Length: 353
Image 1 (cartoon, rainbow, N blue to C red):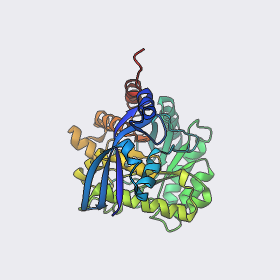
Image 2: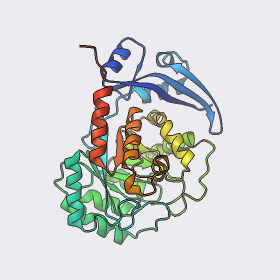
Image 3: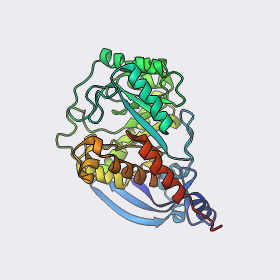
Image 4: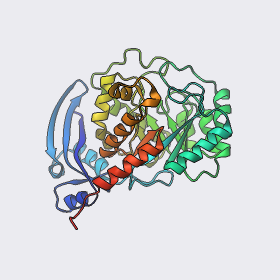
């Protein structure tokens, strides 16, 4: 049977270091976190059995699949695009599309968009994610020519930006052009599956890649999405896409994973992913969550206007970070940075002095 491990009882800072030193916890993705226990899930989606084990006892389980997973959970994550994982990283969203669900048309014009990117960095964004095609539910496909005209002038104006830029695209041609003018990360909501050339392009460009799960396309993804077990099926999909990318020549240590909140998921599917997001550390890659202003946040917060969902979005980001998520993709950088500063100060652990 296939085995999954979901870290639980995640602790931080000095408390985590002491617990690891005393043998009552194991490090999570290196430092500064550790986990006290893990949920062991055995079987296939829709037919699983579950158990809880204290973290140190996992090292004594004589099962190669468990030990392989344990190594992926505990090994440090290499730096990507100059960013280490000593603290959570904020990805600031820069949509240069006329029809994005939250801020479509708000940053029309290359100069306006570039200025907003600099504001986001000043507010604390560690990465700027630039997209020229809306992937909201029902959004139409944008041509390569139109997408190129939207994103490349912005990237040209941001060559000296003191933060790495990611290009949010599903198209190999845009990946090549964007990296050529300054993008350092490829962020593909189709996990390099939409365009037949994307795997080869990403490998040739030697750029870090964000692989995201989506069931269907933006045009179809909310038409009755169905899973036997959303958490495990999304995990399995991302595991397969990692292996496909590595087989194509993408460096394993340059891969980030994103479970794709809102992309072919119902409200309950999204909640299952939010609750169990620490499972994805078992993939051995940094984990990104993009939940800012999305429908599930609106449903939970009781807000129909996407721009009124920032309080819920910030709460969701903090909860994800508390499960060890390394990157949160957000619209409101100021509010998120404030929340993470408070979280860091109160979760780092103290020795009583």
